Image 1 (cartoon, rainbow, N blue to C red):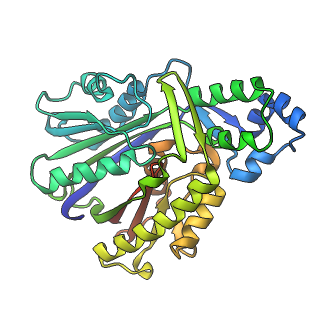
Image 2 (cartoon, helix red, strand yellow; image 1 turned 90 degrees about the vertical axis):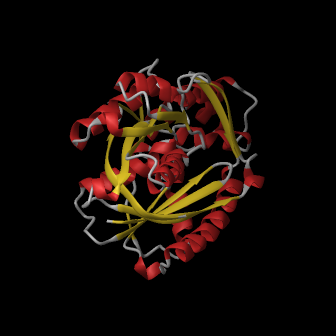
Length: 343
């Protein structure tokens, strides 16, 4: 994938007002911890996650996406009737049918000519949506694309806590496949992509690559509805496959962009936790590069994780004009899309 004309026009995000610390979660799991003689502090020690946000019960993904989109549109300065594409790209959806994008489109009162759809691809959704939107902009089919995500990890976290405390047959070994659930947080993002001529000073997406290892689709699977979700993850095997996939796709991405590691100024990856961050950077030989992380305070916010981290990095004013940024997207399945951005 190569792009000549695609700009990251503007972006914004929402965070929950309520947060649960890892200590709070361990307190809620005190029956399990006592029965299995688990040491306090184990969760934060293993993951590096201090807290994760939750939205109030009953919060719809479309509500979150609408709110973050309204924040974005208020500061973007564009005529929203020019938006030709709306993608709702989170794991969380209001329902299976119709698309959650249809609710957001109605809430925002967008143009009837705008194409809308949901794009669900685990934690890769927003990055995936960027690639799809970039294709349409590059072809001259649309002026602007609005990508939104509203992730609510509250139902998954609540259901997991009840399950872990209620199943007295669980052992130290059998609880491992549920630990990843305890790292999930909540957040919402909105990104506006445009033709570069409509945002001459904005960062440009210049291209990237995709790589998929679908043999790993069984390593992280969730089931349920929009208000009740359970997920089982083989974290060790998922990480092993993920490291191999990330290394392979990073090499493909560098070839497409004609980059070397030394050309890259910033690296932003998916926000899973300490081990994932360290080992992924090592696998791609990027450990010495500048990065920014949010998993410590937000947890793993699914498809919102990478884009909210980029948005928060921008707020620090550390990114300088002309710098090259690598967006290293990956999602269970396993599949990876990595994009190069010139600031």
